[in-house]
Length: 43
Image (tube, rainbow, N blue to C red; front, side, top):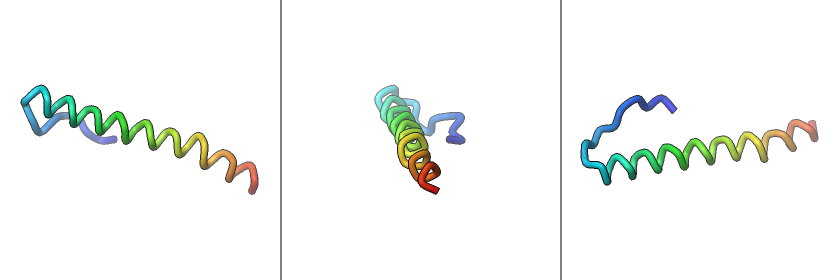
């Protein structure tokens, strides 16, 4: 996703930032797997 470092040094904030990055990555993968393949198969 292009993020190599965190802007916060407090562990709780770093955890929150990492959780958001992991969630965004997972959602991106789910969209690619479940929405693009059926669409491409239909085409």
